[in-house]
Amino acid sequence: GAVVSQHPSRVICKSGTSVKIECRSLDFQATTMFWYRQFPKKSLMLMATSNEGSKATYEQGVEKDKFLINHASLTLSTLTVTSAHPEDSSFYICSTPREGTTPNYGYTFGSGTRLTVV
Amino acid sequence: QQPVQSPQAVILREGEDAVINCSSSKALYSVHWYRQKHGEAPVFLMILLKGGEQKGHEKISASFNEKKQQSSLYLTASQLSYSGTYFCGTLRASNDYKLSFGAGTTVTVRA
Image (cartoon, rainbow over all chains, first blue to last red):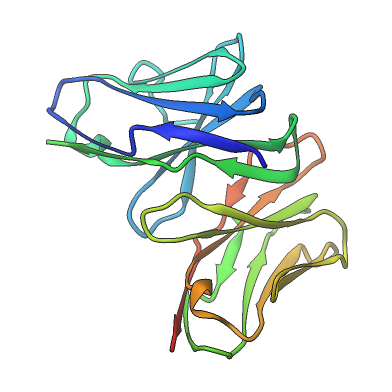
């Protein structure tokens, strides 16, 4: 089945620094990648959608200059949290359709990244 | 836009059954169900595409009433491994691909 490898699983960084999160699709091509943010005991909130070779589209209220998304290849999408602050601490998860580009077979998720900004 | 899930939480003993509901005020094209264990990413359970369709995954099944814009997830003869938070995710059209997730239902199965 479609597997997405997400790294790092946990990261602690100092305020003001940047953190890069990678999601790699294994054995399949991920044309579209969705990036979510999840607060403790809360639902998943879509931050942005990235498509290979084009600019990401961001949801309302998400700062594109703060959360830089790059989808340079069909197997790699990255989210960089720039100038991180404690309020950026959260669980970040990527997701992509399990088969091709259609959502009709569900989505597969990366294992998530727990970001803590101190 | 966000579907409404109920109940918020449920506690079961092994072998008991439970139903989780997901409803929307808008017409739906499909409903997805995912389970998330603490500290882990959500795992796909099933998707329902048509009205009245019912699907199963082990002893977990779901139905989708297209006319009522509602879906229900049935946990039958629950096992300890069923513990986790269940999310429904909805899509409103065939060309829609951005899932709207419900708030989640936390299921705790005790021995």
